[in-house]
Image (cartoon, rainbow, N blue to C red; front, top):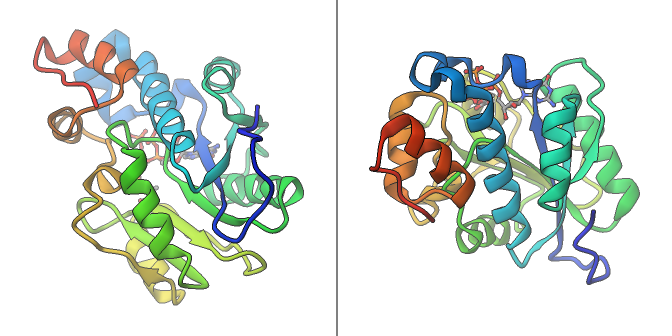
Length: 223
Ligand SMILES: Nc1nc2c(ncn2[C@@H]2O[C@H](COP(=O)(O)OP(=O)(O)OP(=O)(O)O)[C@@H](O)[C@H]2O)c(=O)[nH]1
Ligand SMILES: C=C(OP(=O)(O)O)C(=O)O
């Protein structure tokens, strides 16, 4: 489903969110999340996509996943779901970006990680406004090692380099680093139990809060 209430304009973005097969998702949270691991992965992705769709500059979110359960949940929150070409993360992102360009050739295209459960639409809007000034820009993750957002202006080749130490990779490709301190929710990715606790402290979305309460007890907060 698309947001669909406005035509392409120079400040509008299509975001591509990759969600891998749930059986292989969030493995670093296996011990902490126990039987709730896949529910947590779905909840985090749904809160991320739902917050992104509430950002004024975001016209649509293309979700790339090969997982039927994730696909159903993410379509329900408004994601435009396409199947995963099953050739790895960056291939999935390029595939989603091609779909985004097909839907809205004049819009900027960004890749957004699926694990930002504390994401605030106002902070994403700040990041997108800043990114629009550069051909290619990215937001480093909270640890300063990975990347949570990578985006390109309309017509600029979309060449994401996610995976591992992707901050250095994106810098090496000439992308502008948006390492601002006023967008903590855009930078707070969740891979480990400590990350989850930090996201909860920032204030996570309602779906993540519900599952986090089962995992962490009653310390879970809502964005
Ligand atoms: N569609 C798609 N998404 C992927 C693929 N590989 C990784 N992702 C997504 O990219 C992001 C980063 O992935 P990873 O850090 O490898 O995996 P993770 O599930 O977040 O966590 P770990 O299992 O602990 O590594 C997550 O949002 C994943 O869902 C892929 O092949 N296809
Ligand atoms: C894939 C990445 O993230 P992570 O493995 O931390 O989820 C990345 O930052 O490029």
